[in-house]
Picture 1 (cartoon, rainbow, N blue to C red):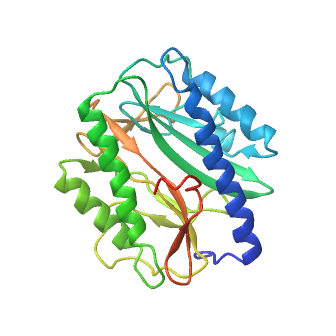
Picture 2 (cartoon, rainbow, N blue to C red):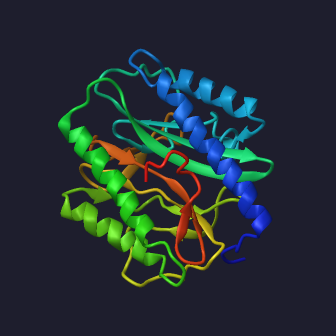
Length: 254
């Protein structure tokens, strides 16, 4: 059906859901500590989202068994919360998607558990910068491919690889809409951005090789093929008349 152009009413509903998703990530900071399990964090996220009159979108989505994704260390994305106990030195991605009054808000960020290594910090900082670089390409008339082109150029320059098996996507009225937003792309490729489009940019940056493998145990958790670290940041973005609005950047981090 092509890329949806959202109405003013839809944009306002999506904005509110995005703000709740961002608040959930902020709320979970207190629980990302040594000794807590990822399942405990999932429980706290679930309760918070429900208390705010929303629904966690991942729960039962294509049989996904939990309310959030928790991706630790070499997990690239879609990590299933379980009895893994966080320890000092771990890096953790939490991915939140809320459904509030039928509208979707999608965001994720990295957390540090205790003291992490300089290598881990560099990876996290580079990944956050990759998202910032992608956001700079978001304005009416620009090609979607330029998001991935610039992200990949920066990551490779810093000796990291970009995951190509997963991508950003349209969002808001449904969990996953057109277009796919690739984090590696040819310059000036793909469709052009238009005012009213809403989509995610969510680069996954690896220390080692770009490819991933899916855990056979749960059928969801995607890991790096070489066991090296991965990091990810994500925002939901609205194209405006003269640029973009970060619907999930409630605290001005970007």
